[in-house]
Length: 139
Image (cartoon, rainbow, N blue to C red; front, side, top):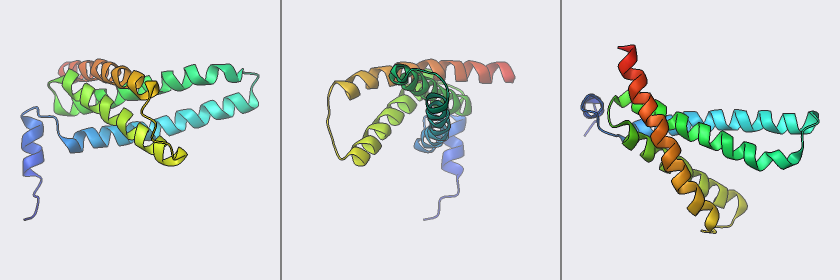
């Protein structure tokens, strides 16, 4: 059976959180994250910036990226921004955990992931709320 796209369009018009919408927003935000982390690496390498700021800067970049993922998903769907944001934030953090675990060959389920899950959910929810409100103001 061929997917005509009608189901996805119908879900978006009804304000449903779709896996495709979340996946697209998270993928775009991963691209932004990579660019921002590369810029951070260049700054730490070539400017007189302490390497001690790197963990805090990575956390800020992650929070902003998660919020952007929630914003994009919620703006497209147009309702339930907090839910779109939470789902996007959790998808971002869980994907990041699995990618990191594969790269470092360590599936350690410790305090790091347990801390980042609520941070991701909260940041995504804030971004989602802003995304729904941005859509309402641009109509």
